[in-house]
Amino acid sequence: IGEQVLLKCSFTSAAPITDSLTLDWTYRPLTGGPMETIFHYQSVAYPTTVGKFKDRISWIGNIAKGDASIAIHSLVMSDNGTFICSVKNPPDV
Image (cartoon, rainbow, N blue to C red; front, side):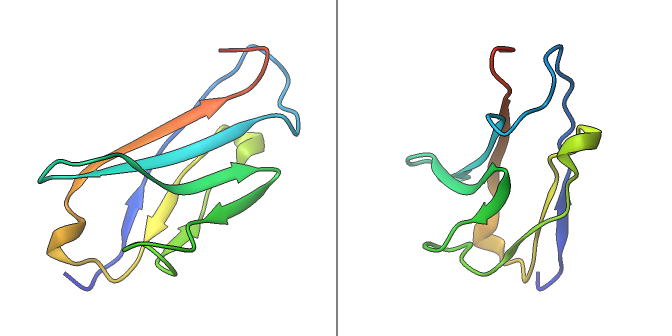
């Protein structure tokens, strides 16, 4: 509670990394409910501007090094849930 957590995500791709690479972090509360996109990356980082994680997500990854990690600040108990990192680098799936 009140701390920061690092959500690590690493990836590899057979295709060269280009501006068409996209990264999404999604979240589903522990209590269930719909998935919510909390972070998007395409050439630059787009932390969510709405919802419970607004202004609490920092980009700490390095796409060139296969690192898609983020940090979440000021944690509260209701942040508990499932976080999924999804990277797409066309044409590599």
